[in-house]
Image (cartoon, rainbow, N blue to C red):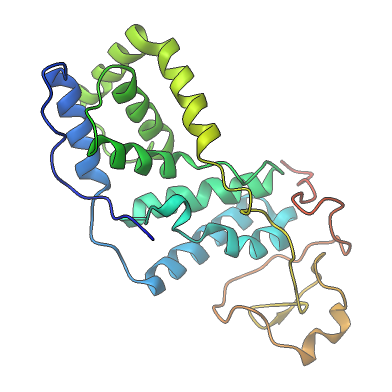
Length: 240
């Protein structure tokens, strides 16, 4: 069951500083938006895959098959807007490209966790500071006010060590062991185009079997033809 991030102000609490209230309210409002349709998200996913492929052409086949990894909805939280989803997808695709683990929550997912938590209990001090730290990591290009930037300096100075501890806790808690690049079946075609893919058991037979996704994009063939040794590992990009 998915929980939609709502937009009310954080609850009043006698120990909740006004500056913390302003920061949390601003961030919650920023991530809250009308949920887009599944086809919009598919378009965003394909666009992020294309961008990741251009950055890491040697990992094009692994990135292509990472489509299943970047679906929203992990940890019961829906992606409420385009910029949140794109950050989430881009981080996971980057992990695939550099052979990093994909089971841990992305910075965008942790921001959604913080937004949900802020509506259940007051956030102040280290918790509010961690939320803003994750926000800056997940959405570096999203508009930030000078006031919020000043607040972050304040949080890091006063609560930096406690924020580090909280971040370790939430990252351990929000891990999806099933979000891994495994059990890949490839017909040897990507979007209907014949390619040399390390995950294709018999590329020569690809013309007789349909591809798994119908949307088209430019795919750079990979020179590797054998699957990775570990089910959660992809071959490193030599250019990375």
